Amino acid sequence: MIIAIDGPAAAGKGTLSRMIAETYGFHHLDTGLTYRATAKALLDAGLPLDDEKVAEKMAREVELAGLDRDVLSSHAIGEAASRIAVIPAVRSALVEAQRAFSLREPGTVLDGRDIGTVVCPDAPVKLYVTASPEVRARRRYDEIVGKGGVADYHRIFDEVKMRDGRDMGRADSPLRPADDAHLLDTSEMSIEAAFQAAKTIIDAVLTRQIK
Ligand code: CDP
Image (tube, rainbow, N blue to C red):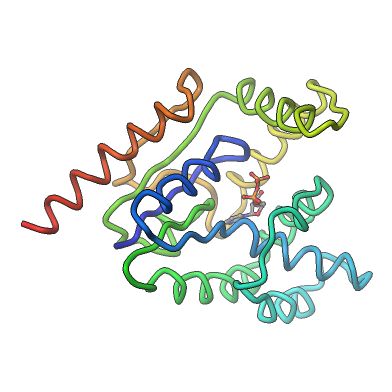
């Protein structure tokens, strides 16, 4: 059983994916962390982000077991991740590792930008989680302030829009809903309501599979 969850920055995919994985006892992979880990390795080594060969080598060395969102959460790493994510050789190295992960038993939840379209096109459940840019920027803002940080809403809003443009506009695996994805607009939904909507969709598929 593979559950593919895609959507733009700060749409709530991460929280939703973790709740789903926990409820069904499935393994969870936040694929954004694989791009972030590759970017961090390049930044730490003082290497350029646009050298395809070097970036691919770093991508091949990423260990899925060691990914930690706390270590990889910085804004600079997120920006660098979206820049190296346009390199096809980096994508194919990371997609290979993500596909291997997706086959774990008894099931997996993968979240990212291209899970339903490229990584796991045959996944029986595909969700495309989105929210308006205003709501997503507000959620990012609240998250930073909630952790005691300082944030500027307008700047975050501009960054959300810029990240959307880069993720949706790239030639290789742009962010878009798979044709058979269920759209979940969480702009006016609590995380609990989004989870209930997702659960209804997943349970329907599981019931069909058992029959
Ligand atoms: O958490 P946030 O929305 O900032 O982003 P993330 O999920 O950690 O991903 C960081 C960047 O990696 C994204 O902006 C994408 O450019 C890239 N990414 C991707 O290209 N494909 C994926 N499956 C996951 C992330």
